[in-house]
Amino acid sequence: MGSAPDRLLDAALCHVAFDGWSEMTFRAAAEDSGIGVDLARVVCPRGALDLAAAYHRRGDRLMAAAYMATDLTGLKIRERVALAVRLRLEAADREAVRRGAALFALPQHAAEGAALIWGTADAIWHALGDTSDDINWYSKRATLGAVYSAVVLYWLGDESEGHGASWEFLDRRVEDVMRFEKFKARVREMPVLGAALAGPLKALGRIKRPDGAPRDLPGRVGEGERT
Image (cartoon, rainbow, N blue to C red; front, side, top):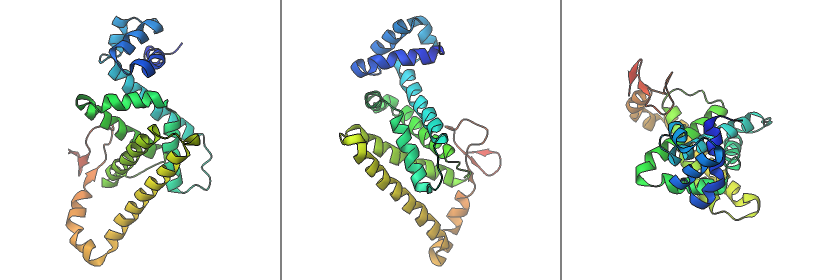
């Protein structure tokens, strides 16, 4: 028997396709799991919103496990990124994701949804072994988060066999990201533009990734200074 949150989530998935991530789904999950609404409210104080967030994070964990179990020999970085995004989507139920997208599109939950997407991008880069600790830590996650969001929307409406059209769309978006990363490197090497941007780049270079803190917190500037 799994933990109470897992039992609640598993029970909720039987109702999400019909009632979305709603109070009705939350109460049905509490009853079906045998936990009861009062205890379920302790486990998930925000009800179905917490269940939807837990479902998203479960997908991140499943992606990471599947990626680590895959033979990556000979794969280029762009292929590894595309693979991780594909594994993330293949770990999800499309109707549950569709209902989640509708929930997190609401103004009151938009910040939560953005944080979850950031978390997915971070989980992917972490699985890929990203070691950046400066402004690149942020830019990589921001660009990949945008790619992931676009691919999810495409995937939700994709009726092609085996979602082949979605994977082609994914490859094109990842290629765009790789071109952007190459452009950033070339800018630094340009004599005139590189000199003009030396000051701003130096300032940006002081921005550090979160260290020893939850990944959804701001980073730091220099040593010990939180942004």
